[in-house]
Image 1: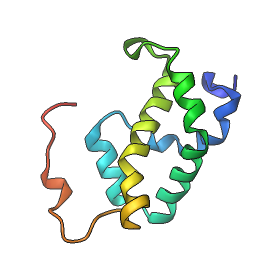
Image 2 (image 1 turned 120 degrees about the vertical axis):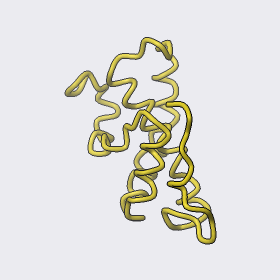
Image 3 (image 1 turned 180 degrees about the horizontal axis):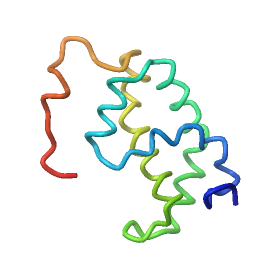
Length: 108
């Protein structure tokens, strides 16, 4: 295990812990306010480990994940949030769309 209970397999992802965001609103905010180079670096790092992350996370019940596993889960959700920016748009925010900050989720 690496520092904080992280499996050594995922230690290269620790610099991206600022993407371990618990809510949709936080993930949207992070995507919309990040530089594309930072988004791309996070995307590349996560994608290279994604299969192993999913296998690892499957050993824990969602309601009882240890903190390091929850961080990996939250980072995986952030990956899903930023994938369109990388794969479709090439920028953090799509052109000619409504302001994403007008959307306020009623759940967290």
